[in-house]
Amino acid sequence: MTTFLIILAIIICVLLVLIILVQNPKGGGLSSGFSSSNNIMGVQRTGDFLEKGSWGLAIALMVIALLINISSPTATTGGSGKDSKIQEQIDKTAAPSALPSLPQGKPADTAK
Image (tube, rainbow, N blue to C red; front, top):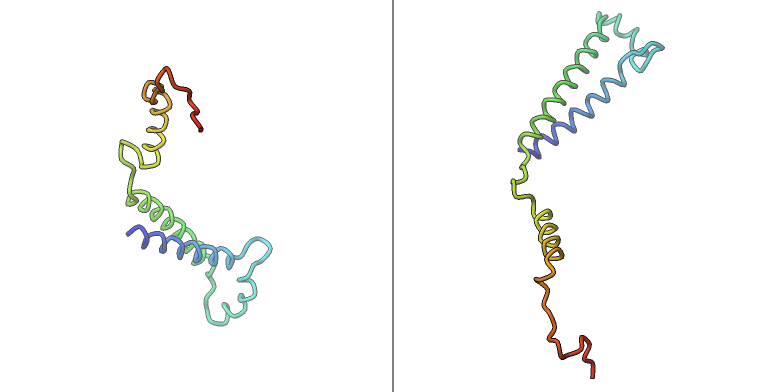
């Protein structure tokens, strides 16, 4: 389920980028080259359609991001595996009595 939502979010991101690039900014944009053909075919309000489409895709992207966050597996209260291993290492170094001690009569390095 999470993989499907991530793929859907990527598709929405690509569509959102394309729709924003096609929109007509103050100085003209990619859609300015199509303005004469829009008047011939009777489509005069492409800006409204593109603006509503970009808002719709942005809202859909936010909803999908929330769904991905909700549906992703969460860590247990005990911590993940990496965190528990780190905690075990901290506990081992914090308790010096847990280290094995050498007998009093023998040296530490007995290389013959």
